[in-house]
Structure formats: structure tokens, C-alpha cells
Length: 92
Image (spheres, rainbow, N blue to C red):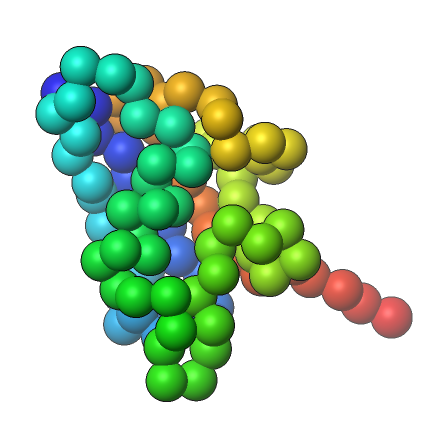
């Protein structure tokens, strides 16, 4: 059994109306970043009223695994890992 905590940042936290949640995976295979993102999109749908929920599009969201940017979604997760999902920031 693997518990993965997912933290959502604005605007996603406003759209989903939550800042975090924990997903439990009982599969004998380790979950991956990809499988967690797929699970989130299946739970909430891929299109919300105001914002597309295309979590796997790198231009739409940045995904951090335990504070480090994820470069590929094939990374296997272990119990207690934390994913943070946020939009890319730009300044100028």
C-alpha cells in the first residue's frame, strides 16, 4: 500500500476547492507520477468550467516530486512521497 500526498497551488487549488489530498494505491506495482496525474484527471475530469485540467502538458503545469521538478512522468513513487502541482511562473 502506497500513500501519495498531492498539494495543489493556485489556480488549481481554487478550481478543485482543496489545497491537498492523499491518494492510496493498493496495486502491487509502484505508482508513477503519470498514474497519479491520470487518477486526478479521472477523478475531476479533464475540463473544468474555467480552466483546462491537462495535467500532463508541461506548458500548463509544473510538477514537483518531494520539492524537485519532475522532468518525466515515469518516476516510480514510494509511500510518503509528495507531489506539488502548480502553474509555471514568469516575471518581468
